[in-house]
Image (tube, rainbow over all chains, first blue to last red; front, top):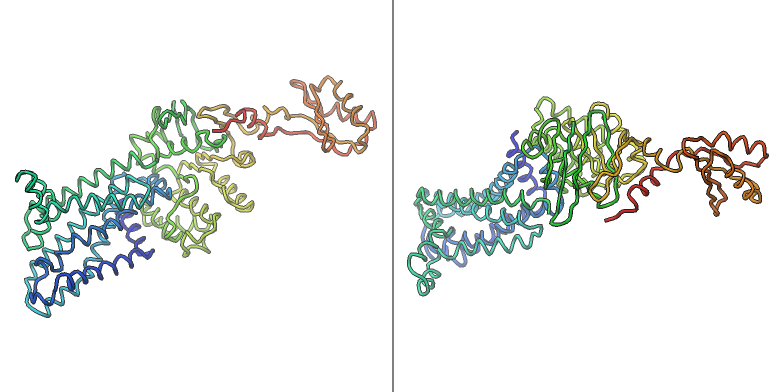
Amino acid sequence: MSGVAAVFKRELASYFATPIAYVFIVIFLVIAGAFTFFFGGFYEANQADLSADGSFFYWHPWLYLFLVPALSMRLWSEERKSGSIELLMSLPLETWQAVTGKFLAAWAFTGIALALTFPIWLTVNYLGDPDNGVIVAAYVGSLLMAGGFLAIGACLSAATKNQVIAFILSVVVCFLLMVPGIGLVQSVLLGVAPQWLVDGLASLSFQTHFTFISKGVIDLRDLIYFGLLIGVCLYANTIVLDLRKAD
Amino acid sequence: MIEVQNLTKEYGRFRAVDDLSFRVAPGEVLGFLGPNGAGKTTTMRIVAGFLPATAGRVRVCGADIETQAVEAKRRIGYLPEGAPSYPEMTPRSFLEFIADARGIPPAERRQRLDAVFQQLHLEGVLEQTIDTLSKGYRRRVGLAQAILHDPEVLILDEPTDGLDPNQKHEVRELIGRMAKSKIIVISTHLLEEVEAVCNRAIIIARGKILADDTPRGLEQRSRFYNAVSLKLSVPELIPTARNAIKMLPEVASTELDEKNGRITAFPAPGKLPLAPINALAERQKWPLAELHLESGRLDEVFRSITGGATA
């Protein structure tokens, strides 16, 4: 078994060996449902659509903003705090293998949580006749966005032994990467900054890229955006870890 | 072969390891001794590939620990200080993870796992989570992890810390059994451990090697080496006896322990005072309660070499 696979398997199993997995999944499903039905007015809208403003996928960035850092904060901080990182790093693995294995495990775990929202997909199909292609695209986009949040969180988790600090930093950084893509924020920014800057910031935002995908438009640029974001964060994670592992 | 050349490690301005050089050959069990903060753990972390050195190089079985890290780590079994592991895992799942990460071939996997379960007596706790295990069991899980792939080099940072005397004995026997074919480096501050398992000892303090010798060689540096101590059942005779012993040419000096009345006679350089003292006692018909030859005292050597250094 390769190093990445060994780390992946251990990490994923460890979620389910502790209450983290169950707490996370239950909270994730409850909040996703609450947003959709109460804030989004799922029934009142009377549309068999999960991607409209205020509908199911619309809330995912906000959901991830707090839940994903809660998942990623322990990835490296806990290993550094407990000293198990010394054990992990004495195994014949390259640092990037450990980084990738852990990230993929956390990502697979959010994938499981996301997949468990399938009743809402069944519901819209029962109630109406939605475009299932758009829903699949939106799920893909949502998973990619979760990967982006996770990669940022993993990198920040490697920088500190303290999980609370890792959590707060991740929320702040993810929030900053989210807001320039929100229409309301853009119009406020336009009052003080030139158009090109606002557009530039928006093109760096999760929100912008996710919104396109969740409407069913899978553009190569959006895929590259999330791919690059994850790649750069994991690369930074590897460097941070090599520098800080023993502190 | 472990080759450490001019190894230096600095944390900011603090020099934890200062230009250390030594080699360890197969069959050697090297005890790393030193006061707390002497640089033992730092050195072991560098040799195991966890910490980068500030200067100098380390080669393990020919592989450089910085440039050929994975190759070197394959040959090393390492027990970090405090035997960290993953508390939510069971010893079985933990050791299976180590087997996967170390790429142990499927054909040998089962057999290697069973071998370490048995060697470290883990059979009874395999399905409990590690956080419910006693300190002794956790340490043994850590040791199991280090020897799982039957490495050529074993680096054990305080392998018997937290074990009860029976468990200590077992771990020492295990180390003794593996010693013939491997290179073993253990750090400890238990001097009895050095005598029990090591055939070479390095004493370090403030990051420098102060002594590198066999445990026996170190004992010989002790002023107690070949000294003779005796006790008389009639305390009134003690001053006379002490004076008479002091006059012997084989004796350099004597000391009297006021609390229990034991006289210790230290040998003149190259002399063996036991026989002359025995003969003297017989001639004078001293009522001897006790007479014995001292061996060297490692703790005393340790103290005199490290000068009570602490950091």
